[in-house]
Length: 416
Image (cartoon, rainbow, N blue to C red; front, side, top):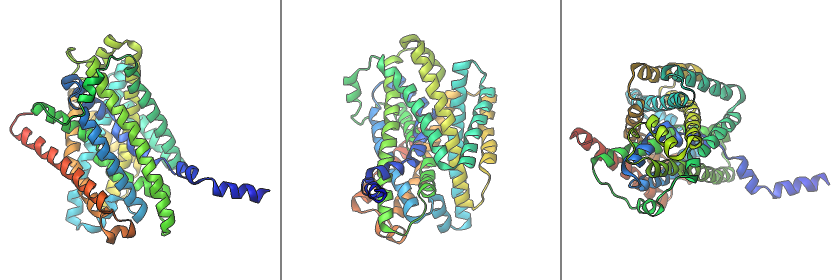
């Protein structure tokens, strides 16, 4: 009888086994719904209405491909992207690459801590600097869970926060009068001026985030281990595809919801160029309940993303410099730039948007080597990208680089 039950369990679970392997992509997906996304998407909706919906959709499609490639690299080779680069670059090259990656990680951290601090100020009236310290303290506690209880418990905490984020930012659409015809028209790729290109680059930096590219390869490897069995690897890759599609479908929907909410409720309202102003405008237009949900979503976003960002920074440093700094110590040190900005009185929403532009400029440094490495048989063996996936990865890389070059030209000309 027992053997019959065991046989049924073994023959039944392909789908269940896949579901049990999900998780790493949901942690990486937090990077796609962080406070920088809120600033970029709210700005896009408030200033350009539905014009840039297509940017979010295209960026999310690119993100699915990119995050799958990153996880695939970790699953197949047992090495993270930073480790692969660290193995191939000379010492000077590793240091130079680490410096730009660390700048990207710092920009990420600034956005996440500031966003969480803004949320605490909106919800509880706490001044920005003490709020930033509190966000840092809670993120340290979340990372301590990862250190003490392991990756699965950390994944569970992050997924719970993702659920709060989703409800917080999607709730407003229930009562918001979205112009769905204009939203569909926003799927047509176009720009109207230099300002729309700058905002689009900010949205791209907030959506296809470099630190998530570096991190996901380590998350997948650490969760699934290393296997020389091709059958096991194929199973893991199937689970990884499902993991990525589900996680980024949720993240993409949240991003689009933010833009649609801003486009419907905020255009023409004074002060909506800041998150605080947007929160006040949402409250005036849609009521205090929706405004509170927005604030709670922003708070959950800051708490989750700052923890994941610190994890990514540690992965980058260990892979490129071969230096292992305790995760909690790194979290404390990297908190300083964000607290300095908060203490200096810099416009927090402006700091958020500019941080996303920095992230956009860092994307090619992560994406180009990822596309190259996953396409090489010498690295991936039989699991190297086939021609269709190579073409897609090259096209995505070219699109992102082109948008970054346009952003640089506009900035140099003083048009942004």
